[in-house]
Image 1 (spheres, rainbow, N blue to C red):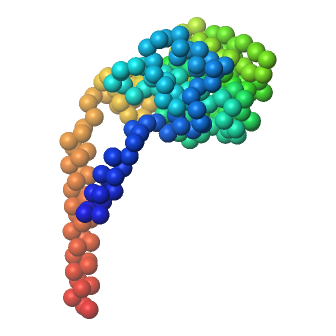
Image 2: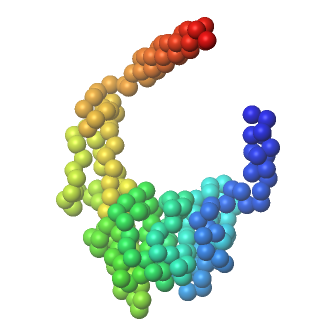
Image 3: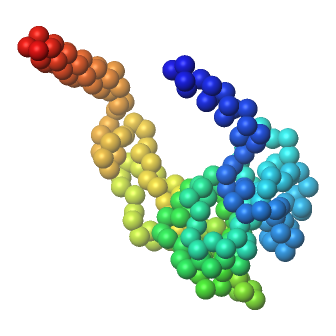
Length: 221
């Protein structure tokens, strides 16, 4: 424990320790030609942090815009999830070969996404209100709500659950109270105390069993 404390203090003292790693994925601020720079400038209430912009003076750490254009990306960076609250995202001028399914799961606020021309918009064209072909990029605008009753879902939510958007062309099914469990078939409040009691009793029994076993072995030595 004593060895852990100095390491913790050192990490807390590092400059920019709270900064999102994805904002420093590429050098410099958002490029002037990027849709992210245009968005952040037009708002007038944002401040830049590397390739990101956030709301100025806000307590929230949510990223509003992220510019990863011209970053020599062949795959999406693993830290992209840090920008799940982004409204604008630019991935143009990168040798990306594909956008794997689920890459933008949780990006429910994303309204403007620019990708290389060779790539399709995540979720397909039907997941967006408008898709515009530019010189060397594709602009996906206005994320559609896949839970809209006018559209047929590929995976309908089970009874006693509600459909909630979970990113471009993706949904998640949340159980409606008081239902829970597999396919929301169980009704009532989850028995938390009973579950914890049983788990605690089983854990205690295992601990006592291991203690008794190790004690017998120690006596035979």
